[in-house]
Image (spheres, rainbow, N blue to C red):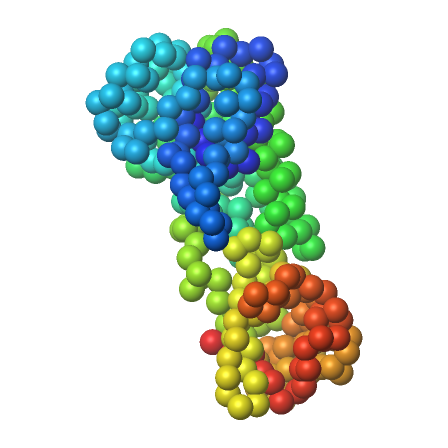
Length: 314
């Protein structure tokens, strides 16, 4: 059960490993883009390409879906980046249902664990397999794999590392369950350094940059949302007109200064720096409305930007 690319890796590992995948469940098709064309999810496309039985229920408690799922007679269900399942679904297989989650549970329970780990400046993250139960992301842990987060990693880099590791961990977990070697651990018994942090769903307003934050915090925020959905700010011209600008890459430049947060320092040709309380954020790539993503020097060649502009602080 899954929808995005992150889930395809595990499905592919199962198929190529010779496991008997009796069926695939993914989200219903949705229109996307300006033409509102129906686009298949990555998981659906993979299932179709490999002639795998497919279900796309609107509601997971629908009787027709439940009956179709029973008819597959699956011994084990695997969930990767999918919706919250009702008990009638996760409790159906004789060997249970396990989930692959992109964090070191119990840290970062929720919809966006990779983003929040980078946004919070963590130096380590990982993946976890765990058995499902009622409360989301709280079931007993089966296995975990840890990886470092480099200071230069954005969320795309961390996502791809975890995706590839996740495929392998799913296989290891399936084998351990089939061989009866699993000794799962309740999450409340696991040692955690510091307080538990949540990973709530990210919305547009979540992505707005607060230039009143320290330079390290803003830098981590930008890379934790790059390349998607992308951190943004309002660029205000001297007449007070504002446009939304997305920022994808930056550098942190700690420095003592007296400029107000959001003030811009630029030569109009090569660099664009935004003031924060303890330094500057050097913007390396960005995007204006209706335009493509550009390196800062490329954008400055076609956009007359001066120090009379500013980024709206909050």
